[in-house]
Figure 1 (cartoon, rainbow over the protein chains, first blue to last red):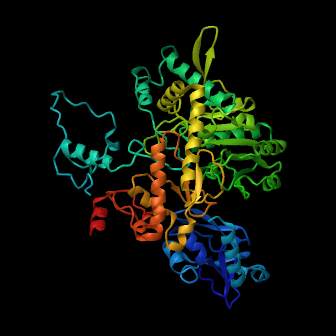
Figure 2: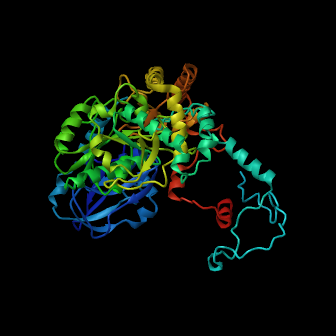
Length: 135
Length: 487
């Protein structure tokens, strides 16, 4: 079972969001997502100061298997970008909730965060998704 | 392994040419444009040169070495007689600027091939300029753009199913349009309701592969065509899988407006490093005037074939001269050898072979969408994940057992996918052996997973570090890099 820390919120597209003390929201992709993608080789992230919208693509993640969109869990302005993870994308594989964080967003609508899935709901979602597939 | 640079010895030559004894002219190229130091080319004897490249060629896998079930790529056998025919002096030595009067045979060949492809696809006219499938896609999209612009109706968005080839959205962006993805439903087909939701007067059209990338025939194609045409959009047929339906059903009859064909797939010409390809584009009557110029025409009164450059509404040239003519010559030889009935059998055998192999392996490699398939099918290696074995490990182990791997991790809509296309040119014995190898790998995944993790072990180089190759991409050999890599 993939690691899903209980202090984070989650999306159906397998991003995580963490509410920091100063109201900023840190965003990354989940342990399940990095495991599915395999070795991540390239990340494209939005520029600092860019606007992102909840549920809309905000970047791309490329692994040896595929290229996928990264969707923003919340709307707001990109306040910080993890430039180190762009240089060493394997950090997302090794530490998706720590060194592998992607961007920090100043949210325009703080209630969006509360609408995201809890760890328990996300785990339930993963179980249901697994059941739907073949095999 | 040594590179050709490692073999280099200063001053060594493959051949030396005696001085002609004639005074040298001033070089035609101005001296300020000439390089001052010679390039760092390897200096080797002819013996070293021949040995080196022969050894390299022996390390390759090729369709002439064994089965190559690479789904979507259609790695069918390339008949050798087609190579001989394309090498006939009358074709090989023809200059593209040859007078039309001296090239009547070549023009007649293009004309006849155009008639054949138009008949197979149910279209009106065909251009041979596009150099391959993706180039055909761009050509088709530029024709769509020209069509909408001629109606004073610039549109914005092209619809693409989520199972589509990656080249489709890339071509759309290159043509200056936006992409909107249409989901597949639980049948693995275009979700009709989602498609209808997405349709409005801003939609340029839809790009579809039929049968689709899951090896399934889009049964609702007539409904899709009707819905798309009702908002003034066009239907583009990605012909990557045309080899499944030749002589059975025609894109034109399904309602498509534009078709590209991959001669290097369906018509057996070489590809996969052996290219170049050819991606002719066919269109219906209402789009004919937008085709690239020039087109081959035939004047009945004088019985002459000629190039007609006078196409005022054309999107213009998209290739130098007449496309990859030598490839069209090979495809023409293939089509003439098989004829209509033969091409129909090609498709029948391709579908039969895929279904035969499917039934051998599907108990161990379940299908993403069970049931009959067309010329290819998508299995999943998902059940091995709990054993720590991935689709990539299955693929690598297959190399040890003497087969080229299938396509892995595509289409993206299927987890741990193995996309298998045996093509019509494999015998029952080969299919049995391939099926047996896959079943053996399934057993090994349970009993000896490390065998799969360490595969391939029988090849000149073992498992490549694909992640490192992508993260630290080095495209150019330099002496400094060589020192750095070998320490």
